[in-house]
Image 1: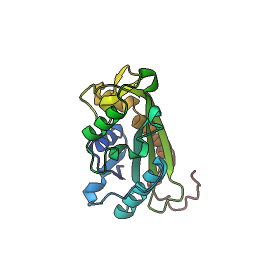
Image 2: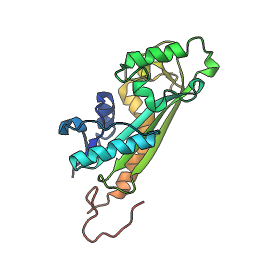
Image 3: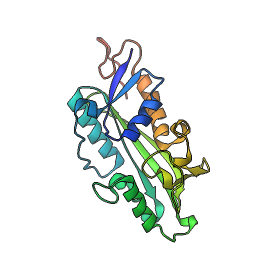
Length: 217
């Protein structure tokens, strides 16, 4: 049985990653744009808050279970910035190039041993808009900020993020490889394990089967 889930994002890069990550499962990810859903205003002060806001909004507008992702780059030298403001680091309408240029400027002449950084991803899954216990998973990818862009793949800060476990920038990794090792892949793996545990045979995603009184954490 194919189960539809709405992705609370209009980011095409994220959509492609999620569709690839879930390609071999029973879940079919649909972007909220397919339902003419306008993205929720991200008023939270943490990845978790923003992800819950987005997931609840998407589920409310579509009536479907929702997955929301809030992620960002944390640079130690910048006290964790850009963090939750990663997508709008250089302004509300900033492009990836704008954000990368600002980051390079702020990190200009900073020695390598002070360029540590990490990608964080928080995924929230809500069975319905009133889900009192959203499932929350987190993935972290350690690295450092490069002094110049490297690679042509990915999106966002990928060209400037040197992944310590891969020995290259995130943008130098083919999508297939990145989808196995990234912060989003790690969070998704944890989320998939939980979702599968929550959907035993005879249970409809988001709604227990008739007579089912099992409590799910």
